[in-house]
Length: 298
Image 1: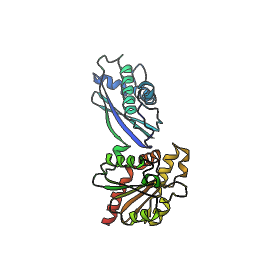
Image 2: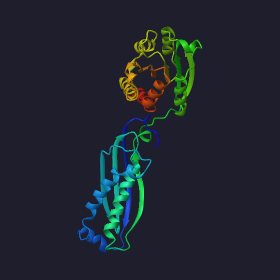
Image 3: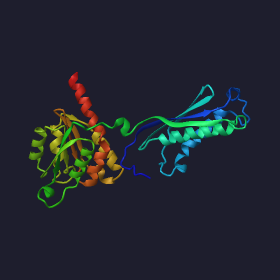
Image 4: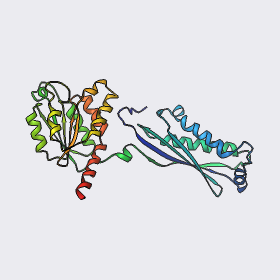
């Protein structure tokens, strides 16, 4: 299976369609009058479709087991065709397109099995995905046209005693999103951090390092008083995401906020901590720039 541990839960929804084509109006009439020998076609097929959705990961090797939180099955008779629509919803890390298509196909196969004694020409003609939403396809804000200044705050790295990895991870993630980046290394000195915040020209200023509880972890205490708006939800998301993966994440003092229309973040200096914070809030945090532009238009 593909690794989805870095993803976050969002509402995922998919609707799939299958079409069962009968060969005569007589078959359609028997369905409507509930005269099919094997029973009520619509109700039996619906029950089978619900089981089909739930059993998807048991039959398709790469499908992740996930919580199915809604399944809806609708039928429409169009001439000699029975159009099946299957909608599946979940709040999880991966989508439900395959579950919806598998469920629709099981509904269609159940109808085929129930109708074949009375209609030798019945066939399944179409199984396809109609729509899906959730995840990056729905909430993936773009970074094109934005710029970021990534600043590593570390005494040891600035002295050349250690190699930076966290800053490079952040830069790589931003560049994947189309954000233009600058990169620098400074000691964890409040005066230098403050100057960067006050003179910020890029859309994003991202510090990495100095967010722990140690005596030289100055970044949060310097950055927070300079913010005009604190993005508490962003801070909560970073800590919650990290805590699910590492129990020490509760000690992190990551910061997120806005000053003069610029987004300012202070992230951990460890490579895992920086990566997890980026996975937790990007690309979704970039939506704030649309919000800020809207405010300026008011």
